[in-house]
Length: 342
Image (cartoon, rainbow, N blue to C red; front, side, top):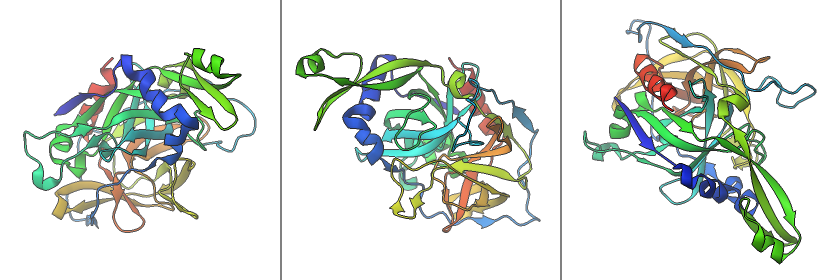
């Protein structure tokens, strides 16, 4: 049931991070939101229909380094949430949302499955087919305005449900990605061409005014830096959830790579799209259109910035209804394999 896919080897981490940081982070700024599955027409499941069931379970959250005191524009927002970046099948940079979740090795990110894999069209899917992972996959927690406040983390291995990687099943459109130890980029000015030629501590590039180098300082493990959300599964569907994510659109038009984290609250309900064989979706009407991979958190406490991951955006039904797979026992099995892996 659980499919494990390698993403970036340890030997290639520096090269992958350099791709995103070169030229002043042009690829980060120019990345566009990943396309969610199109044509979803989910309808509310009526009260008389059977709701998903199973033994309820929770995994506690874990805190990272102590939060700094003092005024902040991001007070009560989770440091665990950030942006996932990757190069799509079209050869261009794209982004989704993602969030750090608790794991044995404090190195795990949750996001939508289609933010990790390029799935085949449903007409081409077979039991033998498998999705192709995207290239240059990284996670930047707390991403805002192009900054990398808690470091950059390259994807190591992806864990997904086989029904998604084979058939693109929307009920299984989730993935957990273990990441390598992070790096903290520090830009330095290089005086002249000779210093530029000698610089080898990270990416480097020329600007109109001179030369710039980017030192890659060690940031350690993701969970040690920002903490990890807990996870809850087989919960009742009508409990209010906090939705954290990056808008797909802004007042100026389509979202860019520099959009900021936004928060909304909603009371979810069961939904399904039988034309897509999606029988166990959860829907919520939100004040903003969240990008794919945006986390839905139960029992969120702003003081700690932690709660329980109980959904994540995989797409839209209509203009303002976000959709998530229902978090059931099968999701927990995929997550459990991921959280125990080294």
